[in-house]
Length: 378
Image (cartoon, rainbow, N blue to C red; front, side, top):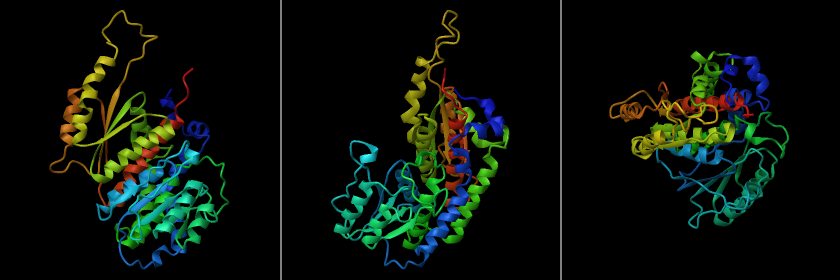
């Protein structure tokens, strides 16, 4: 049950946030700066690569690996194929990764882990060594994964944890570390810039941290809901199934990550699709939902025991306000035709990194507000 009144009570939010989710997402800018400093100390900015890799492979436990690969693809505009490796195994703790058969010395393997203790990732380093594939890991210093990468003469970049430089805690609640995504991504952005895959010089990465701070200032717990876009979005998504419609490659990556954080942090399902395909893909769902919804004009229905049925809400994510040829007007028209409420998120413009930070930070805050202000039904 979502307690919307809690959004107007910063002290109450702080008490309810027993896992420190809001504090973690608000500190994302600081995590970027720390990660960048550690990456520079590890020698990323001094690298002189011979050229671009043929393919970049990304492996890691949890949803962050897929999100990192997705965003690197979006920021690179197809300059180099980026593929997230899907693990197998009976459980997440026993996950195993396998390199594609074509992997060789022209490819680059990126491994990301906030703990660095996954045996499957350590075994993957050995696979890469046998194939002549260069390995780079973002993981805590002195963790087993970092040591494995160092043994094969790869590059281990320190993970900027909530307390950077502290010992690895295998029992830590990694799902509660809402700033981990940026700590994992930042060193790889610096590396991708050196490889020529994206444009992300050091000044741009510092500007990225500034953007995250600005979003935190607009979306923080002390800001009232009516002027706080993240709180507003969280309240709008209460008891709704979000249809995350995106336009633009960065917005699409943001929509898919939003669906993941809604599931993992707030326990809420969501469906994502890119425009204009989303219009045809989710149109039947919009039309069919009315058959699942209780008739408000039915005098004899039990209004106490019956739920109101499935309620959809479209969240339209754009990289910028409507451009020529935009599918956004058609999306609004379809939402209106099916009487589906619609929320909109549009970055105010700027560099690709700035746009990504705006969309990802706002949606991270919204997911955390949903998580913190929700309680179990009696």
